[in-house]
Amino acid sequence: MQIDESYEWELKRRYITDVSGQVTIDGNTQPGGRANAPKIMVNTNRDNLPTFGVSLEVRTSNNVIRNLGFIGGGQIILYEGNNLVENNWMGLKANGSGLSLASTASTQAARSLARGGIILPNEDSDNNIIRGNRIIGAFERAIRITSGGDNNLIEANYIGMDSQGHVPAPHDTGVNCARELDYNASLWYGGRGIQVTGDNNTVTNNRLVGLHVPQSTNDTPPITMEIAGVGNTVTLNVIGRDLAGKDAGVCGQGMLLQGTELLVENNLIVHTRNGFDPGDDGTDFDSAILTQSFAAGSGRWITVRKNMVIDAGAATHPDHVYRFASPGVPVELRKFNPAKVSGINGTSVTGTQGDDAVLPGPTTISAACPNCRIYLYADDLDGRIEAKEFLSEATADASGNWTATLSRSLTADEGLRTQSMAMANGVIHFYGAGTTSKLSDYLYTKRNYSPLR
Image (cartoon, rainbow, N blue to C red; front, side, top):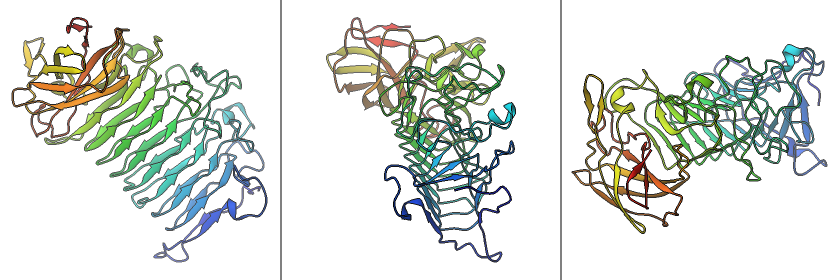
């Protein structure tokens, strides 16, 4: 179906107070056609204009948009709430094999790839469900909640892959992240990821792989998930591994966090890149998950726990699972040392609170963590700080001592990384219960119980 560029494609109010909507646009209601993909492909840029195609603007509530394919650069923009957008394709060719450029009218137009994406742009963009969509080549964001959109669900979307959830060969074993300003047909461009800036949104069970865009040498590669605001939950997402189990990775940081009362847990992150710039190698920015800043004030918290973070062993992949940015996060949290292991006997592990950090000055940052929750992760011996598997958790006593039982024994080429979480306000600096530390810089091995850098 072709959309003329002069067409006003809008679900709009009949009068200023009307937000009722209740329109369903469902490609599967059409007779015949294929059963395993959208029956209707909507070309929003019939004339191949370099300014791209017409976007579907939804200015009412309680609408359903499902089972359509979008090409030509048009976006879905939800200005109101309680809408359902599900099982749509955006930016894929009609056969689902890969990227369909929004425009080939000029070199500059091609740089914007498929453009596309699902946008929730304002404070009335609440209580929407964005589910099961397959989006590739989004140059802004594949899914973006801005300016106070609250209580939205972003669930089970596939971003950056073909319609089968794969990054095809030869890109499937590692996406080429070359920084080139112009579109290069030999590269895989999954586009950008998810950005959330509202409150109490849930981002769950999404898969994002192969993210890459044309960029200059000084541009920041696409960050897979950018999460800000208050009370957002990010859980059970897969970054960097496609549905075929291939670790193609992504070309930017895994997660960038800011705000407060964020819960980030049980995500799998594979083969992200080392921060914003190659010069960040070896710094705190060289991390799969980075907390950039907390909301000001005491009692705030961000919980990052039970995530699996795996690298490829390449120099471009991060040295840390989870770190904090300076100056956005105070040194008291950046340098806080988590619990340490004092003994490993089969699957039984004992430990204490970590060692105090002594900084120039001298300044001492206490590692005291009474009654804290302790998390244990398996890692290999390659020197990178990874969390290849979550193995156990325990609660320390008032002196910081603890005992845990691993879900399995360590192998000869494995050790343990630890992480601590405050269970009361003011335990880690002035932050609240639920504040988690970085993972330990030390790897505790079964061989001698001693920490290895």
